[in-house]
Image (cartoon, rainbow, N blue to C red; front, side, top):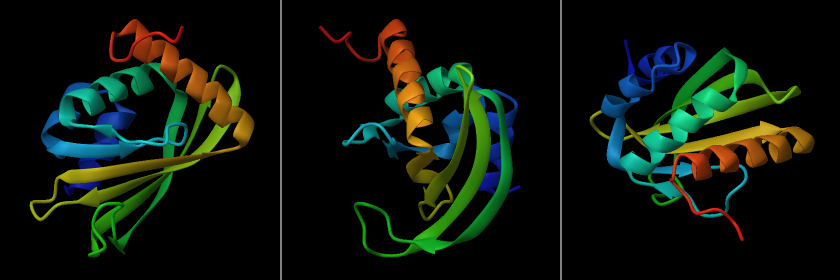
Length: 141
């Protein structure tokens, strides 16, 4: 089973612990609601703990594989796109997870894109609340 399939299985089963072996130590996670990435395995694993609690009826509905450049490296590397549907606080979300792999097959960069805008706003509020509750980011004044 390749990394994308292992990732998909872990997310669909809500198994955040299984993600640890799939990420590089310096993974970057680009969120649809934050300009700068979440960086490093501890932060990204914490974020996934929040995401797995926040999404309702999460399911992958398709995938594509190929190559793509990352944000930090213009050289194309293996990548996968996983299409998903979910709900957050009653809002339907349609999105993609874009995974970039290093030479050993681990995920080095992760980008999420979601639509529509109202769902992005709802997701942003729910994830921020979870990150604050878990002590991963400070509360906004």
